[in-house]
Length: 332
Image 1 (cartoon, rainbow, N blue to C red):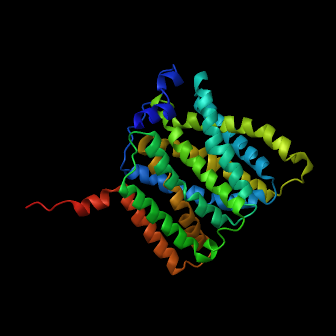
Image 2: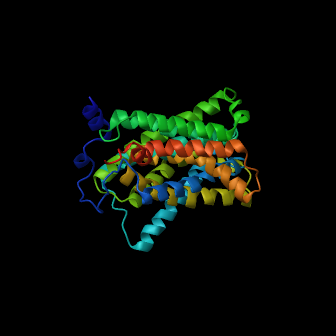
Image 3: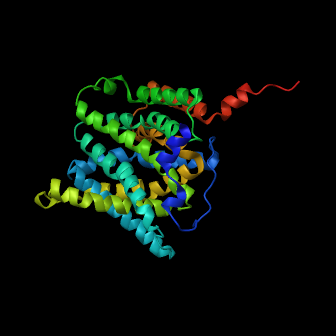
């Protein structure tokens, strides 16, 4: 049954492309190495600031227009990067359908849902709902892959990590769960989309497509999809011009939090798998809180440190190496 589901979900690589691999994809590691952890922490640092930028952007720009601007600028930046390196996009025609699905699941739908949701609820609450992504990721990967199976250790690690995020966000913010239910449901659906997209993106590793190519194709397709939607729904020409602060937030989201971050993200999926890559959403809320404490003179409460410790234990449980050392028998 698992094999049938895997074939149905991931498809056959030879049907997706007739082109030869353009780079040598890495083998997926269930236990992340130092390079994987460095990439994961870098993504957490980048995406930890993204919720702040989103709040600034959607305060002046309609959500769908914000998504289109973010995707368009990010796609243009990656096209310029490929041109500067003298590399063609090299996306076979048969892969564009899969790229479209990835753009919808990883960009257009979740960006729009989070953008609209943050017009109704606080960015902190949106970030904790986003932190449910690894939970969905463990389930989706178990159902539709053969090498990322669910284990009690993974379940325990994800639940510990989510508990740590909840503790850091605080009972005051959690008490607002249940109000603005549609906005919260939108954020949960967006998190589910991210989880499905993480598993869907594995197919591009199988046909040897470099992460920068996948990211460029995804963002380009997402921008093309969002253009008519934003024009029809938001009618941006009727709105007042955004301030310099809103434009700065858009460019930060597009260039750093989208273009650069997605290249890192797809590289991490290639090497460590979807389940491990999705762990970044557990680190986003504590990263935002720690950045506030370091650079905005926000006071770190005791529960913040306790939540950070709980997240660390959860990540260690998912990684497995620390617990393997504890269980390792001592030789006679």
